[in-house]
Amino acid sequence: MTIELPTPDPKPQTRRKFLRRAVRGCLLGGVGVLGYAYGIEPHWIDVVRLRLPIAHLPDDLVGRRIVQISDIHIGESVADSYMIRALASLAELQPDLIAITGDLMTSRGEEQIEHTLEVLQHLPAAPLGRFAIMGNHDYGYGGGYWKTANRLTTGLTDLDVRVLRNEVADVAGLQLAGLDELLFRRCLIKPTLRQLDPLRPMLALCHNPDAVDQPGWEDFQGWILAGHTHGGQCKFPGFDPPITPVWNKRYTSGTFDLSGNRQLYINRGLGYFHRVRFNCRPEVTLFTLERAETV
Ligand SMILES: [Fe+2]
Image 1: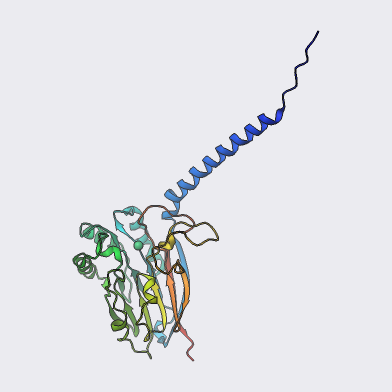
Image 2: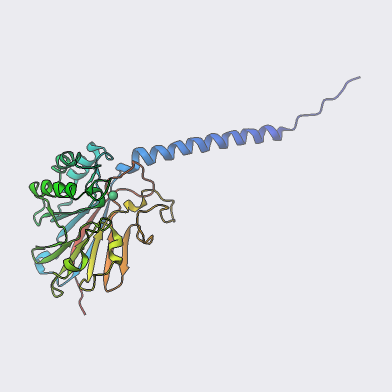
């Protein structure tokens, strides 16, 4: 008598194989994404080109180029080789003016100042000047160290980078207002902006975009260039970044229309505090100046 054995069902094997492949695929995909977010994107610079219309702009400034960089975080976070290459490459954009909107270093206290200044020697020249403002990290990330920011300011001045700390500079007729850091209550908006002549062209630099929601902007109309958020550093396509260091979560990166005929631009930063970026490449912004229509 022959006993017929039941034919094994091929489905469980196929299902098992499929699951094994899916898990393997997910693991490989995960490793790939991590490798990309750590090894490639943090150093893959995106040059964003924008027009910057400013009311009353004199003829001499029409067509001139402002290069904005922000959050370069030299020191404990960023690879020097990357930052030196990035700064040197700005020369290719032929900037007339360079604006650094804060967080030049990552330093607990004063220990990274000399290092920061050494790396910044690779910043190209700009005929209309090189300007910087202080970010929260420029005070040392223990926070609020006035002496650290003062020493960095002195070093930058020696390097021919003018630091605007609640001051207005005249750049060939353009009033360039630089605000100091908001988080340590150094940001004096009203006294700084009161120095502006409303009938002349103006542009403001402030590190933390939350400053635009503070009182004191009544005398200001036009563009404000900011940084601080790093664009969130990681985000899923089509979604806002889950983490941004701002009170107003609307301020992520890019252009925003504000009240009182003001516009805000938030640069995603060139460096990083933690080396990871996903769908949020480091940014250099190249603005071309043009005259805005006035009513
Ligand atoms: Fe920063």
